[in-house]
Image 1 (cartoon, helix red, strand yellow):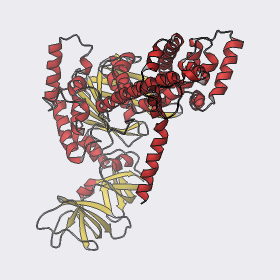
Image 2: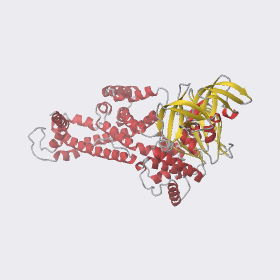
Image 3: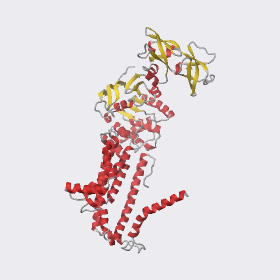
Image 4: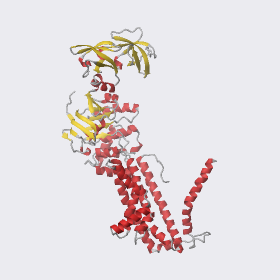
Length: 365
Length: 269
């Protein structure tokens, strides 16, 4: 996916804290109106990158352009970005309206216009009528909405969100995910979200940059990222992936014929191979939902492997099975949708697993 | 039984603590120059007499002048130090902060003597209220830093970043966000340093020269037994003022807690 009109361009950005190399050669272009996520485990540099864009950290080497302008030496208070902090950073000594209107203090607007703008911003985040409340009397979800309204009232070119949902409970988080997406479409501003939650990133983003150790490991849209992770590490970080040891049997053209432990021989097309999978040890990846359990009497034209149920995790709508295929030690995770007429298997039961070669991925071993 | 024993101990403890202070107003209103029971009748003469002692007035004025300026200077220094200690990293931070806090445990008599030597012998200064202020700032600043440190530590750094992010300069952020949120700490620091300076005796005795503070003046009065009831009257006024000050301090502390929306973790009262 090419970026239509870039709003943020980083080239060759490095950041050092003394000896510590926090950002390594970041080249990144983010488009106008994009919902962009920086995803990675803690300490991967995603928050540092966000704070660099906000202007709280300066780059050690490299350049950062925002809306076509070099941001070198431009402090945070003069950048066209606003931020929603992880702690929300609601000013506890001010009311909700004073918090939301804080950024308008320096704006040349009449008092009435400011009050109207604050009212509209609160309305937008679903907190109409909350203006006079004391900020410290709000719930977690309300605080977050105030933080959003406060950041959006200045109509920034880019809204930066630092793990904004991590402090909320599961229900609230799911609700806010949908609301944030709707809000982003409504205001049309570029959103950059920092998160360690891969599910959240997949749900909300147009594009995702996966970061490890200060580097961007993969930059793709959610579907591409899930279907074709470019390294084993990305594959393990995004969703669940099983890995089976494999050995190369034969290479014809671009396709590889691989002997996969527990499954047998399979031919993997070029688009099923991530960089460097070749002769020698190969790790064959397979997602839990691409395999299924065959009940007694069920037939299929897919390939079949036999195994024993090792563990059952029941989720209500889904069941996750750990199946130990004949001939290998490590169990394989398979997810199955639950149906009323299909009983959940018990631990120790023998079963058949259907799979296809098309859903396998080859990684360097 | 165990509970009753502890309760008895607590009562004895409180009596021991406050009985001498309660004696102050009793003898301040007693119509006798001798401080002894039985009481001789009610009088307000000692309070009237207070008003006519010129030297006392100037001592009170000296003490207030010194205590107010000491409170302001040491709190200002405390704000700078606490801010630096909580927000910035710099070489030898631990050592520097340790040395700043050292006067907290240094015997005052040593501080007083060494300052006397430095000020008079080395710099040839005249002993005035200003020399006392300098020394009091030295001993009060560690207390101010201790109080302000916790106030600054409780302040979420992202609050200041949020204000900068919303267009404020570092200076206006300090005024609009930092200062109001650490204000309870600043008020507490002002009151503590004011109180310490007001009743400090040893340093004031050595360094006040011809401008004695109230404690130094009271000490001088003790040589004249017939003036003792006047001292009692003066003490009564000071106790009343201290209680008033404490109530004001507690009022501000509670307001600060309420404004920040925090749980009240207990204060003076």
